[in-house]
Length: 113
Image (cartoon, rainbow, N blue to C red):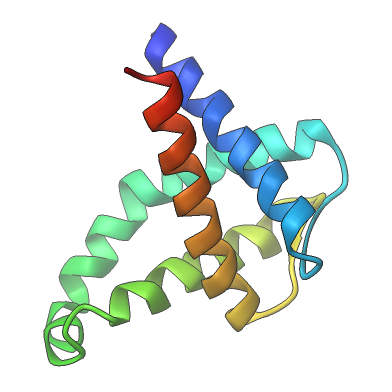
């Protein structure tokens, strides 16, 4: 349970960093960042594997690059669902998802040894 809370805090910090680095991604409050990080985690845990499986032929044809499209769509979708978390568009979602993944990966590597 403690590790789950640490991962949630890492993802929240990464989301705040993305909003700071990218003007096309905005967060209105820290509470909105907490909720958005939680929803992003749930979407990536539940919905993403199903979508990856359903789009496997396209992913194979594009040599895995379609995964970036899926990640961007999910990041953009969460930005439209959560009040206080806004992603300007699809390409902002793709870039935001990439930056979010990199920052959360680095933070997890530093914190979770």
